[in-house]
Image (cartoon, rainbow, N blue to C red; front, side, top):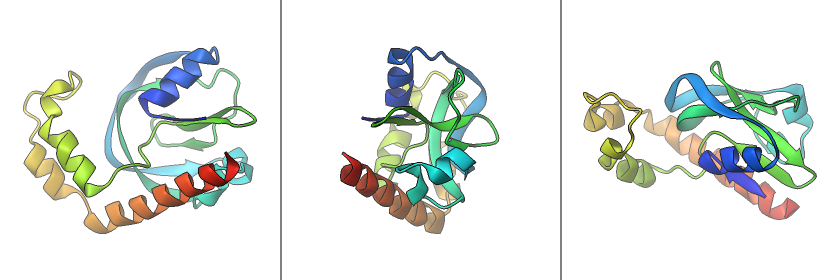
Length: 148
């Protein structure tokens, strides 16, 4: 089982962990660091020790005693809930096309400031970093498929 973003929060809730507001919205590419547990984890170890990941969330999972596998400056980004159950707060599925669709529907997100400018936000994204993130996302999903 691999929960992504809201899916991560749902898996966490089912496992008895609390979901709460993050200290701030994480939207866009942010640095994520693997913890020692993440570097040794059979799934997360496919990722580099430090990478830029795409996030779009204003909630986080309280690890509740579970060691985070990855962290951003704001919140835990990956947890393991069992022998074959993980959750990631970031979006490994993101491609530029997916982002264009999300940004076109930005008004459905009540956590975004009403003066949000989707065209400016999209233009500000680093295409090379997005391509690298898509490569890492494919590696993560490939590893998950191997483990499943």
